[in-house]
Picture 1 (cartoon, rainbow, N blue to C red):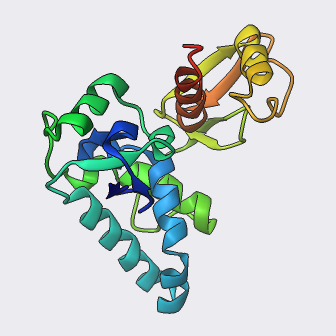
Picture 2: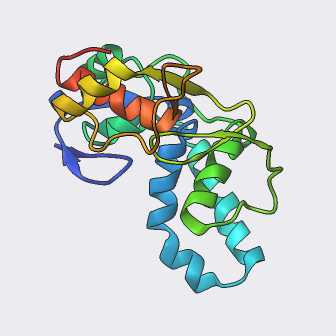
Length: 201
């Protein structure tokens, strides 16, 4: 029994995954969880400049991780990865290719978007891109260049019927798409839950 490197919950190898630092730091959903854990620290340090020190420090610490990440089944919904390969690494105790530290600059935009979500403001030490759209499932801002997905009406109906999706989209289907626009966070969560339920995409 080991503890998940994301949420610290005990988990067994048979129900876990091994991920690289790169996969972890490119997940806005992961950063949201980490910043929620750090809310007390941010409040205690007080002041915008000191809060930015916490922001930069956390990014440097996480991106600098030289070892792979042991991730539980629940936290697997935060990340986009090859589930079969990551499970085999967990079972065998092997290290995935391309493991090791990541340049913090590669993940700062994901972390900044998560910081804005948790604390209500974009970090002043990171350039903020223009907003291009919003997610029809959670109303998250979709910044220009950010990955988004189109989801057809039939897929949403299937996900709602099976419990993969907890609630319907926030708006009617977009006529031009015949469906909805989803942010990466919502899409990864839906695909992961569908795969776990054996429904596929």
